[in-house]
Length: 121
Length: 156
Image (cartoon, rainbow over the protein chains, first blue to last red):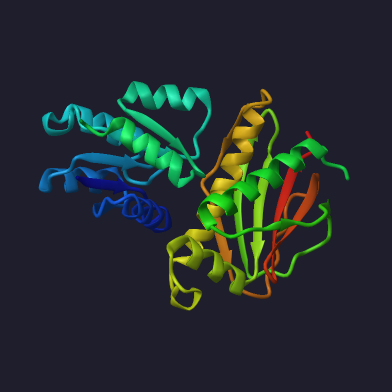
Protein backbone atom coordinates (compact mmCIF):
# COMPACT_ATOMS: atom_id res chain seq x y z
CA UNK A 1 0.00 0.00 0.00
CA UNK A 2 1.41 3.39 -1.02
CA UNK A 3 0.58 6.59 0.88
CA UNK A 4 0.86 10.22 -0.14
CA UNK A 5 1.44 12.62 2.79
CA UNK A 6 0.68 16.27 1.97
CA UNK A 7 1.71 18.86 4.58
CA UNK A 8 3.68 22.10 4.41
CA UNK A 9 5.38 21.26 7.71
CA UNK A 10 8.36 18.96 7.17
CA UNK A 11 8.09 18.04 10.87
CA UNK A 12 4.50 16.84 10.51
CA UNK A 13 5.35 14.92 7.34
CA UNK A 14 8.18 13.18 9.23
CA UNK A 15 5.94 12.38 12.23
CA UNK A 16 3.24 10.94 9.96
CA UNK A 17 5.79 8.93 7.97
CA UNK A 18 7.39 7.62 11.18
CA UNK A 19 3.93 6.66 12.46
CA UNK A 20 3.07 4.88 9.19
CA UNK A 21 6.43 3.05 9.25
CA UNK A 22 5.73 2.00 12.84
CA UNK A 23 2.39 0.58 11.68
CA UNK A 24 4.15 -1.41 8.97
CA UNK A 25 3.51 0.87 5.98
CA UNK A 26 6.84 1.60 4.30
CA UNK A 27 5.87 3.13 0.96
CA UNK A 28 5.19 6.81 1.51
CA UNK A 29 5.51 9.75 -0.88
CA UNK A 30 5.53 13.39 0.28
CA UNK A 31 4.28 16.74 -0.97
CA UNK A 32 4.44 20.20 0.65
CA UNK A 33 1.07 21.50 -0.61
CA UNK A 34 -1.98 20.52 -2.63
CA UNK A 35 -0.48 21.49 -5.96
CA UNK A 36 2.56 19.28 -5.37
CA UNK A 37 0.19 16.58 -4.16
CA UNK A 38 -1.67 16.59 -7.47
CA UNK A 39 1.67 16.36 -9.32
CA UNK A 40 2.66 13.32 -7.25
CA UNK A 41 -0.70 11.73 -7.85
CA UNK A 42 -0.53 12.13 -11.60
CA UNK A 43 2.95 10.60 -11.80
CA UNK A 44 2.65 7.82 -9.18
CA UNK A 45 0.29 5.09 -8.06
CA UNK A 46 -1.20 6.11 -4.70
CA UNK A 47 -3.62 4.10 -2.55
CA UNK A 48 -4.37 6.54 0.28
CA UNK A 49 -3.87 10.29 0.74
CA UNK A 50 -3.20 11.97 4.11
CA UNK A 51 -3.43 15.74 3.97
CA UNK A 52 -3.16 18.80 6.18
CA UNK A 53 -5.73 21.62 5.93
CA UNK A 54 -3.75 24.87 6.16
CA UNK A 55 -1.10 24.97 3.45
CA UNK A 56 0.22 27.59 1.05
CA UNK A 57 -0.32 27.38 -2.74
CA UNK A 58 -3.31 25.06 -2.44
CA UNK A 59 -4.94 24.28 0.90
CA UNK A 60 -6.22 20.89 1.96
CA UNK A 61 -9.88 21.57 1.17
CA UNK A 62 -9.13 22.76 -2.38
CA UNK A 63 -6.77 19.81 -2.78
CA UNK A 64 -9.47 17.32 -1.77
CA UNK A 65 -12.00 18.95 -4.14
CA UNK A 66 -9.41 18.74 -6.93
CA UNK A 67 -8.75 15.05 -6.17
CA UNK A 68 -12.45 14.24 -6.25
CA UNK A 69 -12.69 15.86 -9.69
CA UNK A 70 -9.92 13.63 -11.09
CA UNK A 71 -11.10 10.24 -12.31
CA UNK A 72 -8.07 8.42 -10.86
CA UNK A 73 -8.69 9.71 -7.34
CA UNK A 74 -12.44 10.21 -7.21
CA UNK A 75 -12.87 7.18 -4.91
CA UNK A 76 -9.45 7.23 -3.25
CA UNK A 77 -9.48 7.20 0.58
CA UNK A 78 -8.46 10.61 1.95
CA UNK A 79 -7.64 11.35 5.59
CA UNK A 80 -7.27 14.88 6.89
CA UNK A 81 -4.83 15.54 9.76
CA UNK A 82 -5.29 19.00 11.22
CA UNK A 83 -5.70 21.17 14.31
CA UNK A 84 -8.97 22.53 12.82
CA UNK A 85 -11.23 20.65 15.19
CA UNK A 86 -14.43 22.72 15.27
CA UNK A 87 -17.63 20.97 14.20
CA UNK A 88 -17.99 23.34 11.23
CA UNK A 89 -14.45 22.47 10.09
CA UNK A 90 -15.22 18.75 10.14
CA UNK A 91 -18.47 19.29 8.22
CA UNK A 92 -16.63 21.39 5.60
CA UNK A 93 -13.96 18.71 5.18
CA UNK A 94 -16.54 15.93 4.87
CA UNK A 95 -18.45 17.96 2.28
CA UNK A 96 -15.22 18.45 0.33
CA UNK A 97 -14.85 14.67 0.16
CA UNK A 98 -12.61 13.59 3.02
CA UNK A 99 -13.22 10.04 4.30
CA UNK A 100 -11.94 10.54 7.82
CA UNK A 101 -10.48 13.19 10.06
CA UNK A 102 -7.62 13.09 12.59
CA UNK A 103 -7.22 15.96 15.03
CA UNK A 104 -3.68 16.90 16.06
CA UNK A 105 -2.19 16.00 18.45
CA UNK A 106 -2.92 12.32 17.86
CA UNK A 107 -1.73 9.00 19.27
CA UNK A 108 -0.43 6.09 17.18
CA UNK A 109 -3.51 4.08 18.22
CA UNK A 110 -5.90 6.76 16.93
CA UNK A 111 -3.93 6.99 13.71
CA UNK A 112 -4.02 3.20 13.24
CA UNK A 113 -7.75 3.07 13.88
CA UNK A 114 -8.49 5.86 11.37
CA UNK A 115 -6.22 4.36 8.69
CA UNK A 116 -7.73 0.89 9.06
CA UNK A 117 -11.23 2.32 8.85
CA UNK A 118 -10.64 3.78 5.37
CA UNK A 119 -8.28 1.22 3.82
CA UNK A 120 -10.02 -0.57 0.95
CA UNK A 121 -10.63 -4.21 1.83
CA UNK B 1 -3.87 35.61 38.83
CA UNK B 2 -5.79 37.94 36.55
CA UNK B 3 -6.64 35.52 33.70
CA UNK B 4 -9.42 33.00 34.27
CA UNK B 5 -7.97 29.89 35.97
CA UNK B 6 -10.10 27.69 33.71
CA UNK B 7 -8.42 29.11 30.59
CA UNK B 8 -5.00 28.48 32.09
CA UNK B 9 -5.93 24.92 32.97
CA UNK B 10 -7.07 24.32 29.37
CA UNK B 11 -3.77 25.69 28.06
CA UNK B 12 -1.69 23.60 30.48
CA UNK B 13 -3.63 20.44 29.55
CA UNK B 14 -3.31 21.21 25.82
CA UNK B 15 0.45 21.62 26.25
CA UNK B 16 0.83 18.38 28.23
CA UNK B 17 -1.19 16.55 25.56
CA UNK B 18 1.04 17.80 22.73
CA UNK B 19 4.23 16.85 24.55
CA UNK B 20 2.92 13.40 25.48
CA UNK B 21 1.56 12.45 22.04
CA UNK B 22 3.69 14.34 19.49
CA UNK B 23 6.93 15.40 21.21
CA UNK B 24 7.22 12.08 23.07
CA UNK B 25 8.64 13.87 26.12
CA UNK B 26 7.09 14.21 29.57
CA UNK B 27 6.74 17.70 30.98
CA UNK B 28 5.86 18.78 34.50
CA UNK B 29 3.86 21.97 34.98
CA UNK B 30 5.18 24.52 37.43
CA UNK B 31 2.85 27.04 39.09
CA UNK B 32 1.59 29.59 36.51
CA UNK B 33 2.09 33.26 37.32
CA UNK B 34 1.09 36.64 35.94
CA UNK B 35 3.81 37.42 33.46
CA UNK B 36 3.50 41.15 32.88
CA UNK B 37 7.07 42.36 32.72
CA UNK B 38 8.59 38.88 33.14
CA UNK B 39 10.60 37.27 30.37
CA UNK B 40 11.52 33.59 30.35
CA UNK B 41 15.08 32.78 29.28
CA UNK B 42 14.53 31.87 25.65
CA UNK B 43 16.12 31.92 22.22
CA UNK B 44 13.12 30.46 20.47
CA UNK B 45 9.59 31.85 20.57
CA UNK B 46 6.60 30.40 18.72
CA UNK B 47 3.43 32.49 18.49
CA UNK B 48 -0.12 31.69 17.35
CA UNK B 49 -2.88 34.29 17.53
CA UNK B 50 -6.53 33.53 18.14
CA UNK B 51 -9.69 35.54 17.79
CA UNK B 52 -13.39 35.08 18.35
CA UNK B 53 -15.41 35.23 21.53
CA UNK B 54 -12.07 35.82 23.28
CA UNK B 55 -8.90 36.94 21.54
CA UNK B 56 -5.20 36.93 22.19
CA UNK B 57 -2.06 34.91 21.63
CA UNK B 58 -0.47 31.65 22.68
CA UNK B 59 3.32 31.94 22.89
CA UNK B 60 5.77 29.08 23.39
CA UNK B 61 9.25 29.86 24.79
CA UNK B 62 12.31 27.65 24.97
CA UNK B 63 16.07 27.81 24.94
CA UNK B 64 17.88 26.76 21.79
CA UNK B 65 19.02 23.50 23.43
CA UNK B 66 15.50 22.63 24.55
CA UNK B 67 14.13 23.47 21.08
CA UNK B 68 16.73 21.19 19.47
CA UNK B 69 15.72 18.41 21.87
CA UNK B 70 12.04 18.90 21.08
CA UNK B 71 12.66 18.89 17.32
CA UNK B 72 14.92 15.82 17.59
CA UNK B 73 12.35 13.93 19.61
CA UNK B 74 9.54 14.78 17.16
CA UNK B 75 11.61 13.82 14.12
CA UNK B 76 13.21 10.72 15.65
CA UNK B 77 16.69 12.29 15.42
CA UNK B 78 19.50 12.99 17.84
CA UNK B 79 19.24 16.70 18.84
CA UNK B 80 22.75 17.25 17.42
CA UNK B 81 21.51 16.06 14.01
CA UNK B 82 18.65 18.58 13.88
CA UNK B 83 19.52 21.36 11.48
CA UNK B 84 17.04 23.60 9.72
CA UNK B 85 13.99 21.66 10.93
CA UNK B 86 13.88 23.20 14.42
CA UNK B 87 11.80 26.35 13.64
CA UNK B 88 9.26 24.26 11.74
CA UNK B 89 9.03 21.81 14.68
CA UNK B 90 8.53 24.62 17.21
CA UNK B 91 5.92 26.18 14.91
CA UNK B 92 4.06 22.85 14.86
CA UNK B 93 4.28 22.51 18.65
CA UNK B 94 2.86 26.02 19.10
CA UNK B 95 0.20 25.37 16.47
CA UNK B 96 -0.90 22.15 18.18
CA UNK B 97 -0.96 23.75 21.64
CA UNK B 98 -3.11 26.60 20.29
CA UNK B 99 -5.26 24.10 18.38
CA UNK B 100 -5.76 22.00 21.51
CA UNK B 101 -6.64 25.14 23.47
CA UNK B 102 -9.12 26.08 20.73
CA UNK B 103 -10.73 22.63 20.82
CA UNK B 104 -11.08 22.73 24.60
CA UNK B 105 -12.59 26.22 24.42
CA UNK B 106 -15.01 25.05 21.70
CA UNK B 107 -16.24 22.34 24.10
CA UNK B 108 -17.12 25.23 26.45
CA UNK B 109 -19.02 27.10 23.75
CA UNK B 110 -16.23 29.58 22.88
CA UNK B 111 -15.67 29.81 19.12
CA UNK B 112 -12.12 30.74 18.17
CA UNK B 113 -10.15 30.94 14.94
CA UNK B 114 -6.39 30.57 15.12
CA UNK B 115 -3.62 32.04 12.96
CA UNK B 116 -0.76 30.21 11.33
CA UNK B 117 2.28 30.00 13.65
CA UNK B 118 5.30 32.28 13.50
CA UNK B 119 8.65 31.42 15.09
CA UNK B 120 11.49 33.74 16.10
CA UNK B 121 14.96 32.28 16.72
CA UNK B 122 17.84 34.39 18.00
CA UNK B 123 19.36 36.06 21.00
CA UNK B 124 19.08 39.42 22.70
CA UNK B 125 15.48 39.99 21.67
CA UNK B 126 12.24 40.22 23.54
CA UNK B 127 8.61 39.97 22.51
CA UNK B 128 6.48 43.00 23.20
CA UNK B 129 2.71 42.87 22.99
CA UNK B 130 0.05 45.55 23.21
CA UNK B 131 -0.12 46.93 26.73
CA UNK B 132 -3.82 46.35 27.27
CA UNK B 133 -3.52 42.61 27.72
CA UNK B 134 -3.55 40.07 30.54
CA UNK B 135 -0.57 37.73 30.46
CA UNK B 136 -0.09 34.49 32.33
CA UNK B 137 3.08 32.44 32.02
CA UNK B 138 2.78 28.65 32.41
CA UNK B 139 6.26 27.20 33.00
CA UNK B 140 7.08 23.52 32.55
CA UNK B 141 10.07 21.32 33.36
CA UNK B 142 11.16 19.02 30.54
CA UNK B 143 13.82 16.96 32.32
CA UNK B 144 16.44 19.53 33.28
CA UNK B 145 15.21 21.97 30.61
CA UNK B 146 12.69 24.78 31.07
CA UNK B 147 9.98 25.59 28.55
CA UNK B 148 7.07 28.00 28.98
CA UNK B 149 3.72 28.70 27.40
CA UNK B 150 2.18 32.12 27.79
CA UNK B 151 -1.49 33.01 27.41
CA UNK B 152 -1.97 36.62 26.34
CA UNK B 153 -5.56 37.84 26.38
CA UNK B 154 -6.87 41.16 25.16
CA UNK B 155 -8.90 42.91 27.84
CA UNK B 156 -11.94 43.62 25.62
